[in-house]
Length: 353
Image (cartoon, rainbow, N blue to C red; front, top):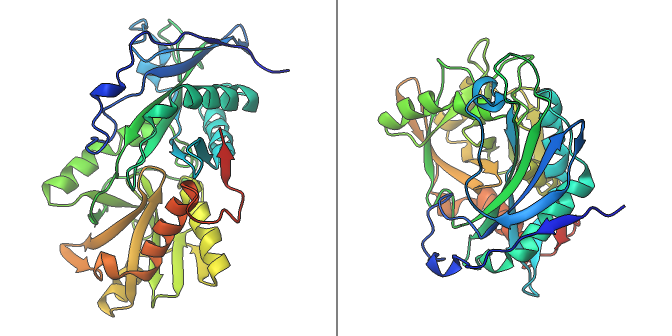
């Protein structure tokens, strides 16, 4: 049965205030948002309304006990000028994986996808067309019980809002190998897009930036010997231009959709891809020998974030010039090309709105 969505459009669009050639990531928001609340054990009727403030009690569970999850997606304009999404069902599936880990109710595919598509269709004029741009989409859910007590909430809100964006990392980044703080460990929620996972990364990131780095590479919580992920991205290391290494999904690492897309594309192209435990000493050894020919992060926001230097134990290991790298440049142009209908979608990843 098709769901019914109440639509309340804005009387005054703000799109004329947006300079689409100069957008600071995550600061400009499109005209509308989609919201649906969960109460009495079921999802209620969804509504699209003008983007704006939401009211809440100071005692709601999400603010005190961290029951909050989110996703990151993008909408693009295809060759026909209409909106299209990149692998949205994978985001839906991962959203429910996160919800389960955080003791929250799952959302139905129909509610998630219908609300998403209706919102994108209404705000389609907010999708930028400048090279490297997109309409970033943020679905999220948080606990709303007006109660101070450590227990799963009985009430939740699910909201989707959007923001036009240019490149997340406009230039290659420097990363520092983290050997003090821990993002996740066995049995924790590293694989979930839970708000708390990002909250605990703030201090280590701040400390790394004071030392001149843009991001950190997380290492395992037991020994700090094996690399896991970097900031908001999964990690890939290219050895001798043909061997691709990426940390295996072990419960501590987010199951990145861009990561999975890269692996599929690389294997189709004939590259050897190894998903396994990777020691930082192994990576540094490759760098010293001149065999580490490429290193990059993958994620929805950046697609491909090229890493120009790795800081480890007080020394920076410099990688080859970013514009001369074969693998990361090819992956970026291929994925962005698929997203914008400039490259054939041989995996059927694009979903029209």
